[in-house]
Image (cartoon, rainbow, N blue to C red; front, side):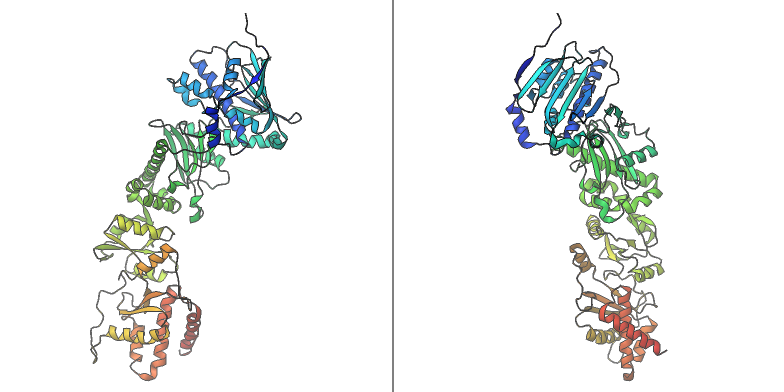
Length: 620
């Protein structure tokens, strides 16, 4: 005799020992989550019936598995109708009436020895009850794959429910939401579609909205990396981030052991240095969107990455919105770091030209990663590139080899020359080039920290900016004249004394140090060098203070080129007292030209320079 269902009234059994700790700790942050939860339940139901069919427990026709969401605005109804496994009366009472009893977990435990378990999405029994966030009343009409009557369940949000037999003919479950007045936005087709695309776009079964399929059932990250084409990666990126520029390159993750992880990580093209924090990783669990904040999974220095990660084993809270601290999470983070390093090494070794084109966009995160992660640094230290003043990219080893015999040593360390601003330091760059040498270009905010880091890692090198006082690459190896005058002073001594007597008088507030030396370039009468230590200290503390009166360097050294014809002429004129005014003008002109080369001729000195230049021109 066929089983029948008697009409029944009762109360939902709330298991406080299960539900209260969860409610206290985790809450749904957005009302729209209910769509994700109900869709996830429907997809779980489809997965379950498909699996039972595969193992022979269900011998009926599966049909096209999927979900149809319908909107009835006039009656304020939003319904979710699937053709999955369905429920019996007993199962409705067990899984719906007893809050927090997870049907997914019981199903997994029953079939725990089978590989299909990772296809079940659900983790908690609260997902269904998210429907009450937007509904005055919720109904369920369901028919199990087993030969049992269909069940109709009704609840108005209280602990009272009704359950009775109904006439549903087809296998599956329909959840009917009577949307309340405050949430009528979810009766708008565009709004519902927006939420589906956000959370459920890549689920493996068709999701229809008013009979039209709205989701993509075959996300690229599930495809074998060897079979995916370059254009597919670009198209998928455009689908994820429609307003972004084309990515530089990508990494396709496909891991089964020791954890399950799939995904595609893209390296975006950065518009400027501050753009490095733009990254967005969409986190999925069995193709269900969880969050676009996966900071625990992604190392801090890789936060610029964009893309998707899908991991079925990730520990999630009831709303699937936050990651918990877990060794599993750390393993994923370490694996991602390794894969990124491997990809960079592969590009460097196999596609050096392409790697160099990408370098300006990725150098910030590589440098930051090297300083932050010891393992990452050890893997990529030999492929870190530096652009040089010759316009080419070299590793540090390549740079040292190219400039071998030119780079000098100081205190047992090889001096590595660099420029931080090609335009402002062009005079110094040209002097270096005239000697057949080149300098590295280190012009980002992170570089002052990075060179300190490299010096700590390698005690055989020292970085010196080309206008620094820690190197003497400009000084001629030929000694300046050693002829001593009647006062036992060399030519360099007399040059230094003259310039100090004039400049110290006019610049008592400036901490100026004057040296007289022969430079390799005779055309330059004088150059200014700065304290490398003090400049780095100020750069690192963002306190580049300057003299408040005329905005010149707080501390600097003027090297007067005793080999310069101009300096020699000044010294000749100084032999006669009637030339004193002209000598003072020329000494100040040498100093101001040196300041101008540093882009630091400003204020009153700039006005005096212009007036003095016109005066000197009139003498011609």
